[in-house]
Image: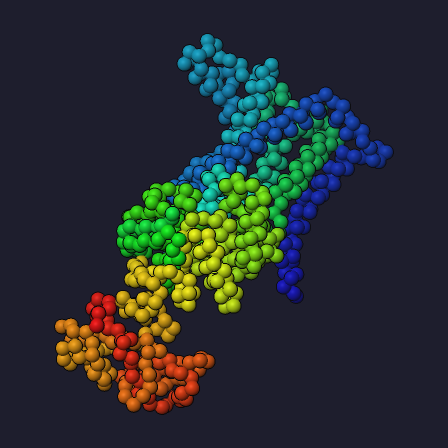
Length: 281
Length: 348
Ligand SMILES: Nc1ncnc2c1ncn2[C@@H]1O[C@H](COP(=O)(O)OP(=O)(O)OP(=O)(O)O)[C@@H](O)[C@H]1O
Ligand SMILES: [Mg+2]
């Protein structure tokens, strides 16, 4: 046996596992979404898109992602830069930042519900301080803006750390000498960040952004906990069609939409943050 | 005006003292070469001047301004790093242009400077490449070009030509000297290559164990080493040393010869002579030839004198073979004496 074949051989079980448990359900879902009594049909997709909630759910998901991911990126980058510079206590601080990662998204949603609901911490605080007379109904259906804000805050609180952890390890492997050279040649702290850290961090940025964006397209439990069905999102609609409306084909169509925008986003990030082979460290 | 003054600078890494209270002054436009064995603190000193390392004590002045509290970019220096530090994510062109871009220099001037320094370093055909596509010597020349393109008042070079072949090094050396003299740059240049040091330097500082042992013109360093270390480090091959025993006031017995020497109370000192300053003849040290190495114009002969290895450089028209016994006479004016305790030179 040649040495070249060995790695492929070793990977075979993992590849088979993936194929069986990803490809098979994927095919099943595709069949559900596109098969009708007379073979191929787009009727399930039409049913999905013609429902008034589809546009809103798609828009809400995209808007949430467009706000959450950039904010998280900025926060994770600044936090990672600070953590990387620490000489002592670095791992302790990383562990503290990583605490929300240990919670499920539903638990995170419930925590923030406890803060924002009518008898929640925030209202007790505001009333206690005398800033409002009666508890405010933040998360009511006429307050869609507040629900949006609460979901964004909860998501940022919950999932910024995963980006940060990826970026911290990425920053850790950038050799110190490049920062020194940049410093000698006149780069300010901000310029060093832009001209050295960011370009050399592209592989980690890619990973972090892809992971986070895909997760943001799938936002569900936090939205349900904070807004019920007031704020429709793609994943919530998938759930609705599958379990409340009992139309598995439309649910499958939703799943395919989420898959499609996830793949699209992944391709965009792969392209945007590509490192030419010859420019690798 | 960019003279560099180093006052009482010391540096410790934990318990290890890398530099011991150095004092040093480099005049405006001077070419100073730092010479010393590996690990003696040359890079550490350059990094302190550049501001990449904080001295444990002492002051650094550049151009009449105290700079030891300033960040590197406010010190008006540029630097060639020993490990090059050529940015892997930028092309050679952008690497050389890096400092100019930080100054927001206009594109035409950037182009002009990059092309000029790239030509000087013979890398103009590599401008579009990335550092991953370069050889070690090419990368090193990019690092030099990047430092030169800044046209700084002060340039710090840490073994900038160490990775080039002999011929290219010779050529680059001459070019560097020319361009730095023309641009009136104050230069500190670290090298292990003594020939390079001799040919480039206005002054040489020889370092040993975190101290400066001698700071002088190349000729002085070579002819009048202030310390035994300098004599044993400079010169290829270095000086020969033989113990000398006092016989009379100012008379010393050295390996069977009686020579005039310093008038000191000491009983035992050390005699030193450069290998090219002994001549075969009727009288002199009795030398049993061990190894003969023809070098072209000269022949390097390694012998035993009083049971210790002793090297002599002889004219190559004189035939010598191993096993032969020579009489080697030191040229009186070239003899140097060293104190065995302080390891420093004793004036004759
Ligand atoms: N960051 C550091 N931490 C601990 N010790 C250090 C550090 N940097 C340098 N040293 C020590 O300080 C001494 C001087 O190092 P330096 O790099 O200045 O030597 P050098 O003269 O440049 O040697 P070379 O010719 O091999 O480049 C060495 O013994 C080295 O081990
Ligand atoms: Mg060094």
